[in-house]
Image (tube, rainbow, N blue to C red; front, side, top):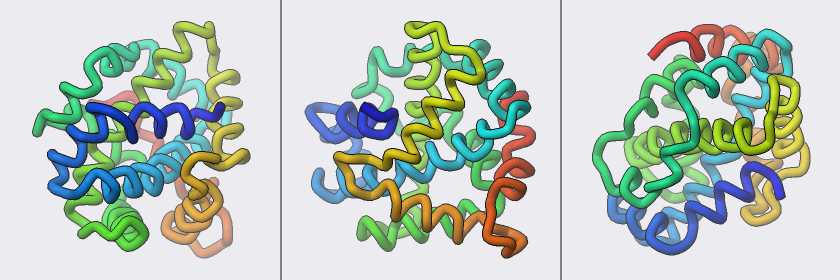
Length: 198
């Protein structure tokens, strides 16, 4: 099961989905669709960064320092709180100036306004990092192992959501700042300060 599928299962069932839909002010079905659209975007950006050794090392260090997976112990409580924790800061470095376009893209796919899509992303970013941190500890993953999990998740797509490929296409289009058809350079630059700053 890919990282995206694992997160999707946790977030689109039971109290987690109910709490998220209440916070976003949308029906549970719309919230589930939005999660399926947003997760590949976040995981995809992290995967692109971690495909470079320095990016994978920075992610590994950040997870060891700040993301131990404890956020998952009370997922419903986090999702029902108006405080998104480190979410805004993570997104600032992950998407940079493209965040507005990412929000609009997810909103158009999921039928949400951009502000609601932004709130969703702020909720999901710490959860993605928390899941990675939990996997790092439970499976003894190093930087290379984390990179493999991220890239494997994107390459396989999300079987539950069916959105993996479309999300990566959207991600590439929105984040390719220099129009060279590749976001490897663009995302690497945007994520440069992600893992050492609050």
